[in-house]
Image (tube, rainbow, N blue to C red; front, side, top):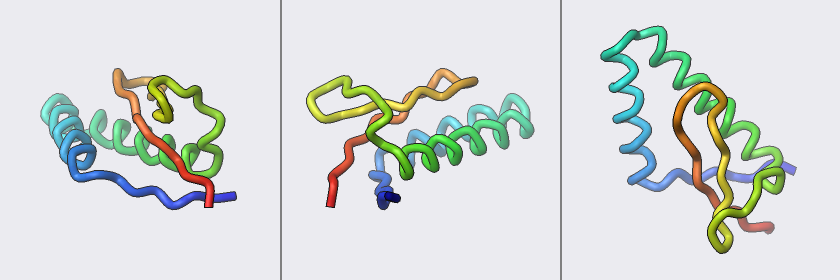
Length: 77
């Protein structure tokens, strides 16, 4: 089953700030960060229950090569 992903405004801002940070260091690094983010969202969308619950109903997805976490909840409908 595939779930719909909704990204809150605060998370969008955090993502853009991180993307700009890596772009300032190296444009290739920025593209790798963006790709890692997209891959993480794809996995969450397909199998959100794979990730452990950390806070009440909030789960996390850890990036493999960047020091970032995606915090998310999901509702079965």
